[in-house]
Length: 260
Image (cartoon, rainbow, N blue to C red; front, side, top):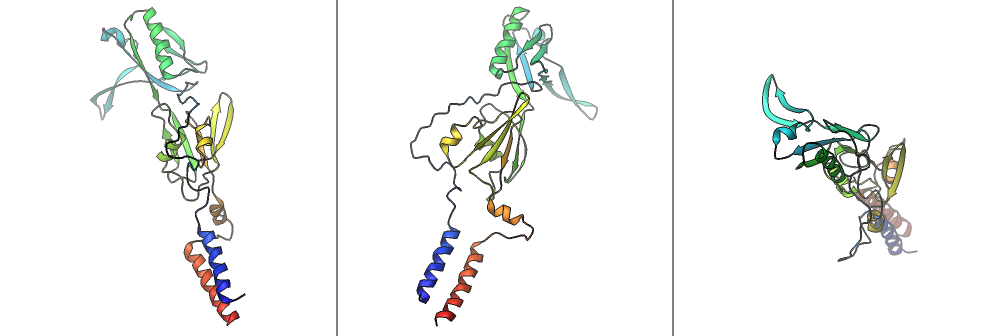
């Protein structure tokens, strides 16, 4: 083997080592103009211990306020701030909320839109024939942990919050996050269900039940092999481009000396 051949082989190995991994980019199987159907329902379904706000309005404001729970005025340093809010309802272990005058209404398993209709029907049976009901999600969260830039607990502010949006709020995956095996742990009754999906594949992502995030979901991003090596006892550092260039320089020097 001559010197030029030896150097060429070394260069090929280094370039291969420094190339972008195939599982680094997201949604690799998508093409321009491609349409993909989303078959899962992303609407939040209410569960025991969830909190919601219920706002009732009608042509008679005084009568409407009888059904608005704990209308309160915020107080700051002994003086009223002038702003008001509706205290939330907490869904009971039996899946109900208790509306003044009306009594208990079963809403567990419903979307907030379905809950609006259920409450409206009960109110129309009593005093408010023209009741207008709005239900909003309150204090619902999900957790992002592992190899993301800003792990933490985040608030669900809307229905159909996607996994990509949830990760985006956490600053996206770090360079050490495994994109092909993101884990979502979801509470379903007394059970925990785990979903593992790949961000590299649109087919895998869009077809997963975990594509939309639900309340109390835990999103965990595993560490890749580079991070795993860094955490070993000997504290290996990332193989940077400068590291490999140094290796090539040493090998080249050795080759020149051997084949001179």
